[in-house]
Structures are given as structure tokens and as C-alpha cells.
Length: 551
Image (cartoon, rainbow, N blue to C red):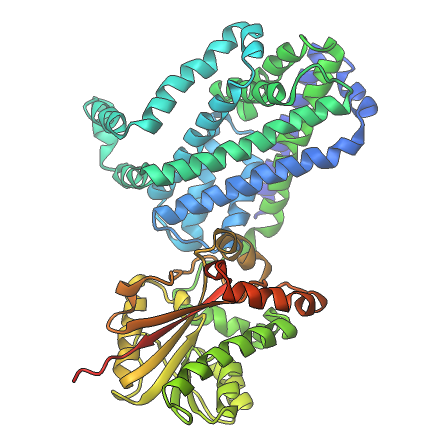
């Protein structure tokens, strides 16, 4: 970021902070100092933790909605963009939100008018969740007078639109007849199409549930701050409702960060349960640990990390794996790599033996650095490796003693019927589209002999916990996946044609970060899970696919 923009951002943040401090000091002089000196700071970590939970869930919702409109952004980059825009919460009219679509466009080339729909949906879901939470404090709504009508006034159209697809269509038709909206209809068509994709029932319900949990966590921070000041007259549910009502009051004014109305509304509610001085102290410290914590976090990310997450995504995945080649093996701890390697090779070997293939010719598609090829060759097979990245193939040759082949899984460089078997270890989900994956399965079928078998090893994302880990955490912690992958469910028969699914073997429950001592202790439990009713919740699976004899 140029120095001039850094200076402008710093001045803007200082102005907002000064305005906030002046507001607190004007309505109750000394409340700021009182807040800092009388608060039990043992509660500070809890408040910040709740704020981080709120941000984490809202980030997952952001990434989820982007994927629903077909925009795939690497998780690290998306997280950087999400956090950076927190620094612009204090812009008027939410204009700072426009930075998100702009940065997404710079990173992956996505059309701003499409991603703008995600921003709009985020704000709609936030409002809907806050309205629901505000109703937890009906007594407070009565006490704060005119502001009490705000959640109710917002609730009716928001809830009605959420529950009724017909109403949403009617609203769109109504606006389409207005002269102003007709003039901008064509430029905004991509936004409308994206909103239509997000307005589907399941998507809307899942995103709303995430919004409700996220804002419940943030709102619960008020209960902790109250406890930190020794105020117990407001119940936890009442505190959540009071926070939600005040947040709505601030947001409805479109003022920067809701500064002013939010504080006045919340202080009015707290005056009923404590002294004015304590009420303003609670408000001051709450906003310091929520709003201004987020702004400071966003400013740090925006100023320090923009070069990393704004680097334009390369068109081909081999560039990513080429850069990763020197440190690829270090991505997974050696004891966990050996654990996974033994389980996968053992399962393939058993299937091959059952089919009488004891010294077969196999293709390792996406061979990487050659660990699996070397293990199968020790079992008597001849393996030919293929990868798109020459630096990976150099390590493959060092490990197996045989040169690999540069090629693409969607266009294999071998003649028809060249192999007894083939396998792909966590590779197919990296292909750039479903069409590329279908082409890869068709190519595998072509190069197998009739009756040949293909082992598809994939991550089992039907387990929701493992899906969350692989989509949101693994790409941040490790460099192998980026969060843009096209995952394959174990029952996607249409995708794997012309191959025929013969079996699915579910195995491994221990994540890649399992320490060595825990692996020894938990290996027996894992084996029992692999044989039990819960096996479908495993971390990995192997699909056994066969090329049927056409005769």
C-alpha cells in the first residue's frame, strides 16, 4: 500500500477513535477512565474470544456464500480480504464494504457485480439474526422507547422475505417497474443472478444459522463485560437482546460503525439496571473490545499483509505445486505420512491380490514425490508416474529410480489398455472443474485394460467436521490445499463414468496434526471405528472403480 494511502487510513482511524472517545466523555465525563480502572480484566480474554468466534463464523459464511455463486478464492487470500475490510467498518453508509468485491476481483478476477451480491446478502442476514436476538430482551425494548419499534419494523419484511420465495419474486418485479431501477437493471443483472443463487432455501437457512450463532457470540460479550463490572441485574439472554437492539439502532442510521446511536441506545437500556457512570463505562469498554478491536485487527492486516493475498491466482494448479515441491514432504509429519501410506497401500494391495494382480503394471496419476509408487514397487508391481510439475517428478525419480512422465490427468499420454491398474492419491479434487474431473475418469478408463481397476483416494468431506477442517483450517495451516478444491463424494457414480464403482473403503479417523505419542495410543480405537457403524465418518476413503469388459 502506498505511503499516502497508509497515512490517509491512519488519519481516518484516529478521527473515528477520537470521535468515539469524545462521545463517551461528553455524555458521562470520566466514564472512560472509570471503565479502564474498575473493570475486572480477567474477563477481557473471554470478550475477545467471543469476538474472534463471531469473526471466524462470519468468515466461514463469507467463503460459503462465495462458493455458492461459483467464486472460488483461496482460503488464505479470502481470510486476508475479509479481515482487512474490518478496518473500514467505521465508514459511512457501509461504503467500505465495496472494498471486498474490489479485492476479490484483483485476486481471482471475479466480476465485482457478482460478489457485491454476497456483501448484500451478508448484511441482510446480519439484520435478520440481530432482529431475532433483539427479541430476547422484550423488557429492554419497552424501556428504550421509540427505538423499540426498530427490531419489530425490521422483523416483518426481513422474516417474510426469508420465508417466502414468492414474496422475493414479487419485490423484484415491483422494483423492476420503477424508472430508476429499469435504468440500472442491465448493469446490475449479474448481482441479481447471484442473489437468486443465494436465495435458495437450504443456502439461506444454513447462512442464517451461521449468522445467528455468530451474532449470539458477539452479543454474549455484553454479559461478560457486565460481570466484569459486577453488574448481575441483567440476565445473559437479556444482555444478548440488548446488544442486538443497540447494534440494529446504530446500523439503521448508516453512521460510521453506528457510533452514537448504538452507544446511546445501549446506555439507555443499562441505566435501568445500574448507575449512569457504570452504564457508560460498560458501553465504552464493550465497544473498545468489539468494534475497535475489529478495526485495529483489520488495519494491521490491510497494512501488513496485502501483498501476499492480493497476488493474482495463476491459471494452472501446477504453478502452486511447483512452488511447493521443495517443501512438499514436510507438509505432513513423517509419522502421519507413514500411517496414511501404510493404510492406503495395504488396501490397494489386498484388492489387487484378490483379482490375481500380483506383479501388475500401474499408473500413479499425480505421483508427486513418489512415496506410493515406491511402496507398490516393493510389492512387486511396476509403476509409471505422471505429474504436471517437473520439480515433483525429479523427486519421484530420486525415490523410485525411474523417470516420471509430464502430463495432465485430463489427457493421459498413454495408449489404450496400457495398465492393469491405476490410482490417484488426493489428486482429483485439485482439477479445476467438474468437466476436468469427468475427462480424467474417462481417460483413466481408456488407458486401463478391460477388467482393470482404478483406486480413487480422496478426503471424505461427507463428515461435516472434516469438511470444515479441510475447507477453512487446513488451507490456512498447510500449503497443499488452497480451499478452492472440487471435492468428490463417495457416491458420485455419474461423475466417475464410464468406470463402475465396485466398493468404497472408509478408513482413518486421526487428523494430520495428531502427535506421535497420540497416534500410538489411538491407533487401536481408529481400527475399531474403521470396522464399525461410524466408518462412513472417516477422514479418507478409497473408491474401487472397474473398467468393465465390453464383451
